[in-house]
Length: 290
View 1 (cartoon, rainbow, N blue to C red):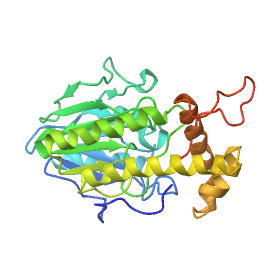
View 2: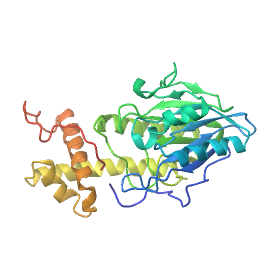
View 3: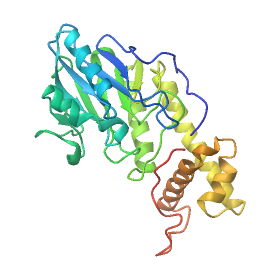
View 4: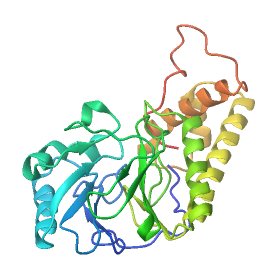
């Protein structure tokens, strides 16, 4: 919901990537999807197979373009992988599986096609290079990132965006999200990552700077919510009006959900009293961003 961009945000999305990873931008731009969903094709140069990450919406032209890019390189689609269940990433997966015969791998069993899911520590090599699965719940409870060691990059789904900051969805958790950001920050230190490749927006060439920005932003938002409560604001709508006053009003519905996530977090760590039974006004999990 932050209108600014984290350090390292570049320009150009469609066709961008690394030696082993290429982006095809889905035609679904919006306030929440930025330029659209980034579909990533991952393969070792010269490989006869490719892995498709997040096929995006159920858009026939986009799915046919994925197939054409693979065929143009003499590759078959060996696996379809979902970073999380949201429809702007997953809705096209069943149709792409129909077009290619490839299984769909996901944490959420409801979105799998085939016998294999995704678990932290899994290593996928059907594209000829390693894709290491990192559990990064927070945006959703089924979110994962994918580390490509050969290119020193991580595909982040919606855990990190190319512009602005990510949502905490209804089935997400701010506490889990902070842990996931710290996990990615530690990986950056351990491996010297060169870039983050997000599910929306441009490639990010300063992983450490981006992740520090995200962690700082979350801490600042929590402080702002604490200050709003101290000033007498109680419900999420009142807090949004104060904390998100400079944000596009069209995004306030998502900001209100984000405030619920922050209130939930502050209760969880004992800074606010527990929600009274039957009072759902401020106890729900968010579906928006902040």
